[in-house]
Length: 587
Image 1 (cartoon, rainbow, N blue to C red):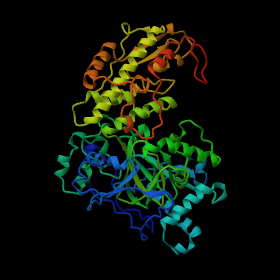
Image 2: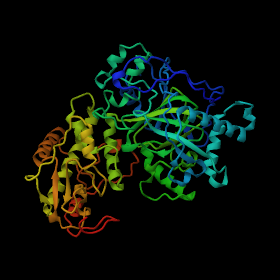
Image 3: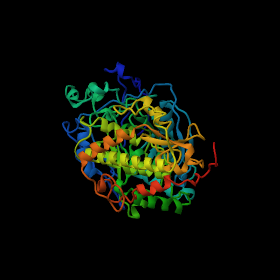
Image 4: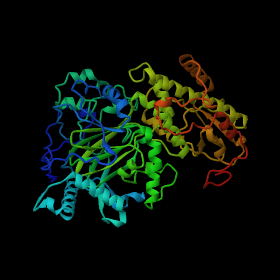
């Protein structure tokens, strides 16, 4: 069954300077005595697509994912089974004495959407023993026919039914079911199950082809190694010199029976990739990104009907609410499922909502990544975040301009390059027009008196991201990149040009423009973009179309931002409203 035997050896996650074969290998976790049963899809929840690439197809993750994208997006989540011969050891140090934190989940109250409290702190072996004891106890109590002495036979279909009974029935069912989920364990601070790869400039298919397939060096150099995928050629996140935790640097996940990753989609509508290192299966459900808006409507209805309190705001990003995948499917949203086994990858596509739970103790690892086609989704995510006042994990504008500075390399080409140029053109046109409106409303031009540091756009280093953290619009949480407006009443608060009217109640004569990119530089870039793109048509009276058009989502349902004329009228208003919860006058 799922008994955990502490391995005799382990391998701690090592730095790039230690790249090379390990001194020893980790003993494998014991195999399950009862193999997982084929899941009963039933109802309207259908099995998702499983891909089985050949060794040749598996060489480059970005080339392969591009080849399955059109079909995979229709499912939202898909399974990728590596080629025959892939049997990578898990390099997590199970003998380590370091403790990890956890989140305590009350399974019968997941529909209520309450925040998770901190759970216990465990070493890896302590967590495994705790998780195994819980699973044995549950089976003996609820399915005595599957338990005999120390031996347990786990029917995963029964456990899936148990889980949804607990979640759906709430206080009317099995109450007090409490589990600890060891989520978001930073691989950079603790361990990764993958070997540490070489420096970024050594990551490519040519060097991979020089390795013996499925040797230690092959696993270390593979683009499917989650330590490498964000740095692999073709990744548009590879210009981040420092790892972004959970985005370009993976997180480790320790699961136990019924520990839950609630419904969510990825930050900034990134792709994600999850690898199952060892242990019990993990049950997944997902919806296509094109049905995200329909999913959100049904999700809120189900939570409110169950007595939860989920308003119309962008509350799903808190990742603390679970409702039945089967109830969602009954209300017309397509839902697909899979049961992930050790050695398998799960890929989620941009804006695809997904969630699930573990069927016993397991070890997984996940990270985000972005292919060139993601640029079309980035624009939609950026607008959504600005409207809900949600801080993005990366600066949208900085990344777009960094991609522009690196055009001509192997990252952006074809249709993705045109989408990038359209988005850059939109950003520049909006900034120039809103600068004019702000100056016309009385905001002062101090460009000849004070020159802020210029934006660095060849790479994104720690100095750049630290500086970005200091120029967040207090109204919409957008990272101001080209320009912003400050006021003499505050030494730290700034607003983007869309929200000049929401900075404070001081007269605009006290406000001033901060220009990180000069007008001359932006006009020169606009001229280049116009020559590359040609004239862009207007759309429904708006200034610019949403880049990517129908490629973003057939059922997007997200209106374009206010027109530039509307934004200009807002910026020029002298009698300005305050944001809720703020006080008038100088701070």
